[in-house]
Image (cartoon, rainbow, N blue to C red; front, side, top):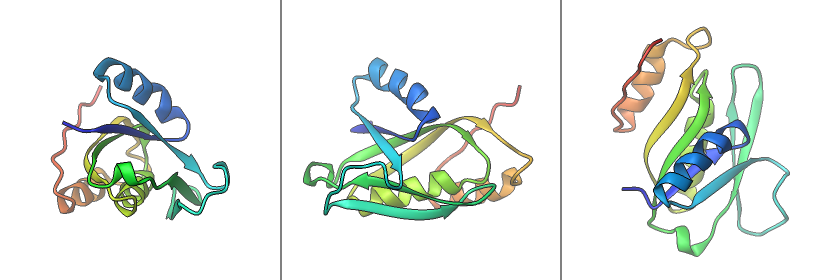
Length: 130
């Protein structure tokens, strides 16, 4: 299993916080750029969203080296945030085991493109439509 649960700011924190509490796994909070205290160990990744460009940040710590993480977010439109968070965690020495997203917004990106990205990353995927 994963060593940590990670979630991008801010809606993902609610879902990830509940999973963290239920599993006993520590929660890593991924922040939007400019919200972390100044540190030489800040890792930043820029990415495209459905509407604009954005960036996420995380403070790299030695204890994260070689650890595994599951990323949880509330929704996915283009996969941009998920891809950026994965890159951010990898730059911090961690490996991403998988992604959990509550909602997939099909109107922004065809599901096939997101599935291709997951497949290329070695991830399996399951979608449940309501």
